[in-house]
Length: 153
Image (cartoon, rainbow, N blue to C red):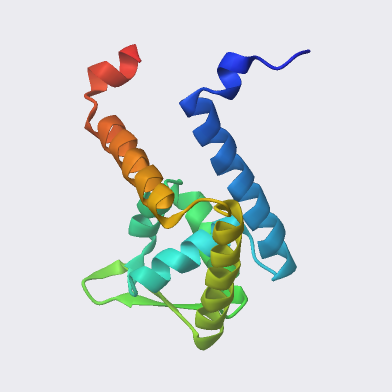
């Protein structure tokens, strides 16, 4: 079946394809280093916000609490995070990186940086900034849509 040239040039399609390919390439690289994309995302969020509760982590990752519970359990078993009681809520546990988790975040950041640079090869710094500004505008437009607008879109 021939490719639809309209689809190939559609901004939405291109954004989807670029995100899909970046995710796939990162997953390929991550597996070589012994971690998965969901684990990396969780580690990155815990790195950004030490003492993060699972509920907050699930919201940040846009996954349900059962999914994040499994991810956090696997990270803890691997010695990458420590969980400790929330001093403000006895039912909740907070997470922080261990030294091994911090080392893995450093490795993952290097993998991500290399992937990012390869993906943007050939784009000037000005082109990169223009693209980022335009993508932020699209993101902000989508975030500002009302529920009714979202349902009719």
